[in-house]
Structure formats: structure tokens, C-alpha cells
Image 1 (cartoon, rainbow, N blue to C red):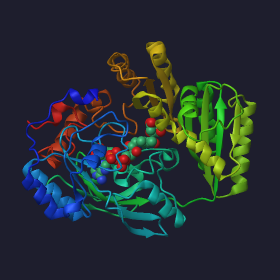
Image 2: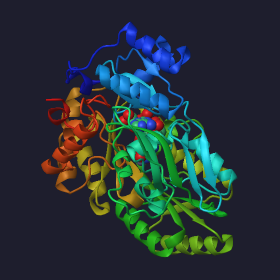
Image 3: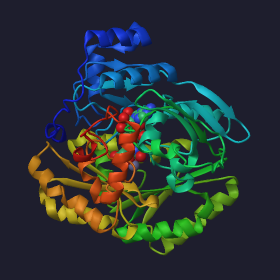
Image 4: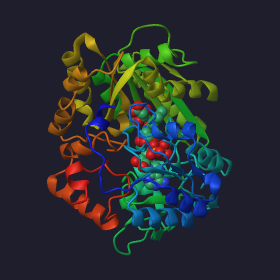
Length: 482
Ligand code: FAD
Ligand code: MLT
Ligand code: ZN
């Protein structure tokens, strides 16, 4: 990708030799030291097929102790590493930039304990999110996060990106739900912070450094998460709105009228919706054919079926009568509810199928959010398709721009405009996907110089040789060893 070509390999890092390979084989056993070309080419390429590294080595540890031995050795040899989870990241953070060693902890996928009273789950960080969802479901609980990539992403990757997703509006971020974790530092030190307490004010709460630091400070190996009880009544409505103002007002109404049962509020503009209908297998318009400018998916989750339904129906009726909603359908069974979610969760995949994509993940005050999409349409004219969707309930816009092929001239029209605009409105240039490689040199649009400097000092303290996920998160000028 274009971002990769602009940076130079840091010559401080060694390159792998046969002694290294032998050493890793001693630690991990032959079959967990992978040099197979097909496996490596998949691990070198990100989900968007935009970032491509040239690593020659993929390591698959099976225990914290093995992770510790790998890192201790890499640190002593100054071999750079990339922690990789399910490789569903969207900012180029999960793949090597050059020849970094890939460490995938997907084999560390055991559930360690589950407390049926408190709902506290303790597991290894390589567990796939969807497997955890099914596991806790069987125990009568749900995971506090859900996202379209659940079939591949790992909980360690979710924590490392501080993934938001489809339920954040109800259950909050992982900074609240993760009660503890275990991480291995660059020099192999194992930090046991795997607490299972709701409250623990003993000094600095260092686990938070590993939530959202994208593998730049350590490898997360175990996690402890608070899971909410599964409630019996779930309803999903798919609604159409004539304009963006109606979507905003509908959100306010939903927060007031649905209150404690609201569990998702997602919005999709007409352009995104059409891409799904055209490119996603099994996608059908849930509404009678008619042109609408916006679609909103609302989910409620509560404990009393008739009470919840009554509440939701009153809200819908009121919103229809008031003109906020121009059409809508309430899922009649679980299959219909899944088909609504299929549309929303299928947007990223559909956009990928439609061509090249320039993807932005922004926090912007709700009132201003869609202005950016409209301004971008004016800027780009007919040369690109501009789409807006996302987690409206969290003020999180996914601005996606699609063209038949990558084009640097288009990119120059989008950046830095999109970052300047977001910064001007005091938004964040990364709401939930992280900084990765894509935005390492853009972090100043959202963080002050002093803040970024302190981040660099923390990085230096925890990883003095800079071996953990180099070129990512922090600007090159600060991150490289000096
Ligand atoms: P990877 O992509 O492998 O890695 C992501 C980052 O975390 C990298 O920097 C990597 O180095 C680091 N990392 C991974 N594992 C570890 C570990 N054990 N220790 C230390 N560092 C580690 N994100 C959202 O926030 N909300 C969404 O709704 C959402 N939906 C998505 C839908 C689709 C279809 C796709 C493809 C992606 C979506 N994402 C979303 C983006 C992505 O961030 C999440 O999918 C997920 O959190 C990444 O997990 P992963 O295991 O794939 O991590
Ligand atoms: C989503 O909400 O669908 C994800 O964050 C992925 C994306 O932004 O495309
Ligand atoms: Zn998202």
C-alpha cells in the first residue's frame, strides 16, 4: 500500500538467521515455527488487502511462558515482532511492515474459568470472540461486545484495539468491562494483572495501558471480562428516515423513551445500503421498495417481553406519527432479526467487494457528523462513491469512500482534509479501529504534543528497543530509537 512505501526499515533491527530459527524450534517445537509460504502470505496481508509485509516467520506459542521466552529472545537479538490476532484490524496494525516476526496466539484459546454468579469470564487471549459468545450464551450470559468480525477476531485483538462495536451504547467500552489481564512485556516479563474484582483502587491501574495500545506495549495473553446476563426479550427494528436530522432526533427519542432497554442504535445511509444490496450474499431489503435517504437499526434488550414490546411499539408509533420515521419493520422472529443485523454487519465486506476503499473511523458530535459526508461528496464529485454508516448511538461515523481502483489523486483530495475537519470539530480521528500504521503520523490531529510525548516515554520505558509493533501507533519521529 501507499502508506508502506514512505517509511524506511529501521536498521537497528536484526534479520532472522538459522540460529534464530533453531532457537524458536527449541522453545515452541517444530510445527509451531512456521515458514510455509502460503501461511506467511496470508499473515503478511491485512483484511483490507491494503497493507502487505514481508515477514519470513510466524510463531505460534501455546502458553504465556512460551510468549515470554520468544519476547525475551527477540529483545536480546533486537528482532522486531508483530502481535497478530485474527488479523481483522482495519488500520494496518496487525501485519508486519517489513520483516517483523509475527506472533499469533490463536493456539492459546482455552477458557480458564467462568463464574455463573458474577458472570466473570477468564480466558486465554487467543479465544475467538464468536466462540466466547456461544460459550457464555450456554451459561445464560452475553459478551459485552459484539462486532461483524466476531467469527475471526480474538479477544486479545479486541482488547488491544479497544474494539467498540454494536453494543457499546448499552454496555460501555472494554475499559469498563475488562476487569484484568495478563501481558508479556518486550523483555519477557510477565505482568499478572488478571484480577477479577469490580473495584480495586490500589495504585495505577496499569491494565488500561494494554487496552487499545495495539500490541505496542506488550502481548496480551489472558483476560478477565465481566459479562452481563442474557435477557429474555430482544427486539430489532429496521427503520427508514427521510433525512439526517430525523435520525438524530430519533436517537434522542430512543434514549429517552426506550431508555434502559436500548441495546443498539446503528445508522446506514442510502449509499451504504445500496452497496450491501448489490454485493452481499443473502441481503434483501427488509422494507417495501421505495427510496429512503437513511436507515436506522434499533435493538432493545430487556427482561419482560410484553413490557418491552409495548414500550418499543409505542416509541415506533410515536416516531411514525411525528414524521421521524417514514417506514419501518419490526422483526417477527429471530431469523428476521438476524437478517436485519446481516445487512448492518455486512457493510464492510460489501464495500470491499465494490472496489478500492478509503476507510475512516471518526468520533464527531452527532449534530455535525453527516456534514462531513456531504462535504466530502461535494469535494469528490462523481469520481468516488462516498458512504456514511456507523454507531450513531456512540457518535461514531464510518466514512468510507469507494473507487474502482486506488488513486493517489483521490487520496490527496481526502487527506488531510478529513483529519483537519475532524480536528476542527474536536472529534477523534480514530473512534474504535485504532491508529495502527495508517494513522501513526496523524495522531497529533487528536492528541496534544505533550500527550503524544508522554505516550512515547511510556513506550520507551516498557519497550526500550522498540521491538513491539514498530512503525505503528506513534509518529515515526518519536517512536524510532534515538
Ligand atoms: P488483529 O487485527 O490481529 O490485531 C489488531 C491490533 O491488535 C494489532 O495492532 C495487533 O498487533 C494487536 N494485537 C492483536 N492481538 C494481540 C495480543 N494478544 N496482544 C497484543 N496485541 C495484539 N472494530 C470495532 O471496534 N468495532 C466494530 O464494529 C468492528 N467491526 C469490524 C467488522 C469487520 C468485518 C472487520 C473486518 C473489522 C471490524 N473491526 C471493528 C476492526 C477490528 O479492530 C476488530 O475486528 C478487532 O478488534 C481486531 O481483532 P483481531 O483479533 O482481528 O486483531
Ligand atoms: C463496522 O462498524 O462495521 C466496523 O467498524 C467496520 C467498518 O468500519 O467498516
Ligand atoms: Zn464500527
